[in-house]
Image 1 (cartoon, rainbow, N blue to C red):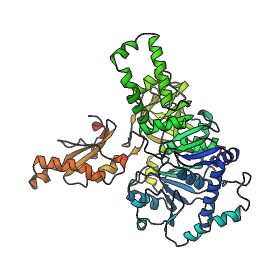
Image 2 (spheres, rainbow, N blue to C red; image 1 turned 180 degrees about the horizontal axis):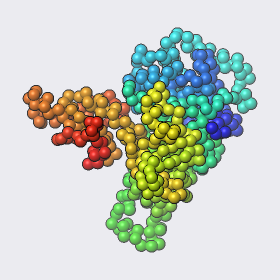
Image 3 (cartoon, rainbow, N blue to C red; image 1 turned 135 degrees about the horizontal axis):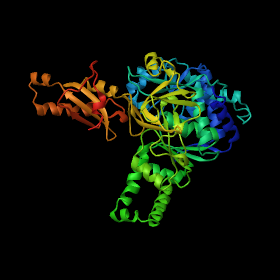
Image 4 (cartoon, helix red, strand yellow; image 1 turned 120 degrees about the vertical axis):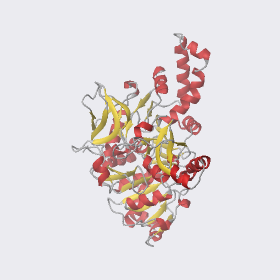
Length: 551
């Protein structure tokens, strides 16, 4: 257990930065740290009067916003357990997660609430608006009165207002559960990652010691806060220092992000590869691929001038004020990585997983090594499950302060995720060099990694496809960064029903639209390919997935 504590970081940050800007919605309201303190106090009075105890679960669902950040910080700062739910999840998934997590209260964004039905929630006491605290559903009949009395209760507790000396967060030991992060929602695939406060504290401590930020610096938050990457490094870490965090609140297309970069001028940028690759392909590749440019780039001195101009343009694209661009969540395009290194662009690549809250390895841009994902953070040990970790690829195993407690109410999945001697199985295959830099070569598990860093479990999609007409076998793979369903039809059934080959093809291809209706956006099938032969299988009759990952 480490000595540093996330809530102590937060309490100190709020006190030291009382008059500084803290949280802003893009093109919206800005809160000072003292305003954040007041809103946290209101949340804690609400929790106290609704009977929330330390360790109780509180679920929240919405896009990045000041409301989301306030709710999360208030929840963990009270000693309760935060249960972030991705807004991409279907209503059915949301109902299931709220029930499975044993959440006592739910806070939901106003744009999501119309898609939900209060009567479908089980075990919850009340549902509130994430933006306004308006009561959306009350299953005990007692919460509206509490809301009506909230101002009075606040005045009674702080008759002269909340001052910097009076502000306090709960004293919570690092060994207590702080967050349950669901990597999947569907019944039968529920994997709620249990993270102790120690894991969150360790991630923030490492970032404070190794990433270039200070009080007053600006951050643009556009990675989903429901994912551990965005949560740890676009909210918890900068908030602990007294930074000003602006939440994009819009769909993060490259055009929207570039406009926001120019306006916010962030001091540190965190991103998934997809965004950076799109900027690279749209802003740089069309220039350097011109025939005349290809010639000029081979001429010494001239190429240096050209690279300098591209470097300067890129800095402007990213707002012109950043010290480092941190890329993680998915593999980075080799061509973009090589080019960025060639021009001396300050980018770093890290590696993590939700089960470590998330950081596993990192190296600053000055320590960058091609194709590596950095070195293990100081609170973790890494070993490669092979006889020769430098030359022979094996599964990456992890042990240390960041590692999860396990999966909530899922002892089978928890047991499968650890070795007998307590090492977390990452599911990633790789090796290390003599200096400890990690090189990832592939995935060992079935899990697919979406282009924006989402964890995708193909079984969820396959189970829905299996229920469709004339589908005998199916397999979901990632091809060209798009989810592709490979389907072997039930030709015998079609023949018995006198369905022609052309009609069968039409039916099978039509399943894409139907199945996508029941899946969140990041699980949408982009293409269906009809197979002529059955899939090759193991002696246990499991499909040999590795044979079908590539075209």
